[in-house]
Length: 230
Image (tube, rainbow, N blue to C red; front, side, top):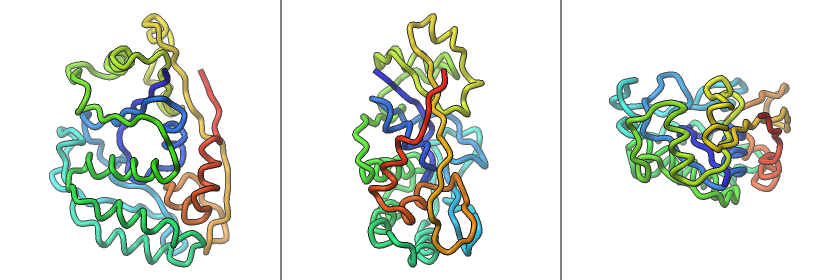
């Protein structure tokens, strides 16, 4: 069984869903410390023909708090920003109702809000992977880093742990192998698509930008645009 563990990211780029689609079980790592200026509550889209951050306002955020202990502010301005930025894009009518539902979600808890956003987009993209929230199922918060990931793999019965290539320095292949777990990494391959309203291509934006420009079916094709590294 292939497993991945990732912090919940707000409207993440396509590589996040590539990993989710690849594994059998995907765990939202919501009971680790909030990281300031990370991707938990923001991502990049095109606003006024330039790349800008779309950021969830937070309440009580601190690096001493867990992600699931942080609150969020109102989201109506974010929804309006998305509407104004993408209303002339080819797949706006297909995608905007999904985004509207995400940003109107009733919870003001950062973890629940972002996890719901990721689940909603995964469902829209027909991702069938089992999605699990760490704090609701696992009780090994006394462990940290690689030790906790290995414990999660054993608890879930995973034979393979897959992470994004950016996390390669965090883990030891020898340690995973000694615990009977194959360690692998996913690398998103470069790709481009027509971005409405701009003259140059801006890569690695939120999946929101891919969906607005390409639609559901073409975006699903990009879920396979990766390679493995061990």
